[in-house]
Image (cartoon, rainbow over all chains, first blue to last red; front, top):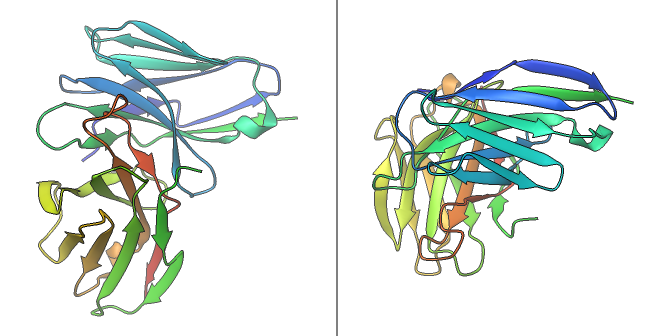
Length: 112
Length: 115
């Protein structure tokens, strides 16, 4: 079963604009991670935020985490055509096996 | 490039057959996880191996089984294939003792089609 729900399911913006994707989850977590996937290929790890963190930055990426609302957002600033991909949030409950529970993803299209 | 490799890249099987997928983990990583990703869905956790032992399992039937070898490479075996097994199978390696212990590094996947 999917833990996370990404919103929107699809997003299309112009190059240079900012893209925001949201993720909600259901259970307590140890950390939340964002991954990118190009055209049904392997997943690329973007950023990890721990449950005791509220915001994290990496280059053009900004991630926020609100554990009280069980939600996270990923902001990509100054988007580029190469950012076109599917983006997934994944939660790690930190119990036993390091099991990631993924949402269904947001399909992001950057138009030139 | 994560250093995680998978083989084969594509595979076509018929219903009822058996399949073996292979994964080589990133150097120094002793943990391998397998995920199934159906078209248009997020990946779902199948199981994880740590130092050659199964270390957790998702909601998949026993016909999904695995192995991890002393060099930490891994196999996923699926018996009695069903049409719904058609998916992208991803493996991911990690090092629970490392500084980035929570990060999993994914391979490019094996696309399985069951006819």
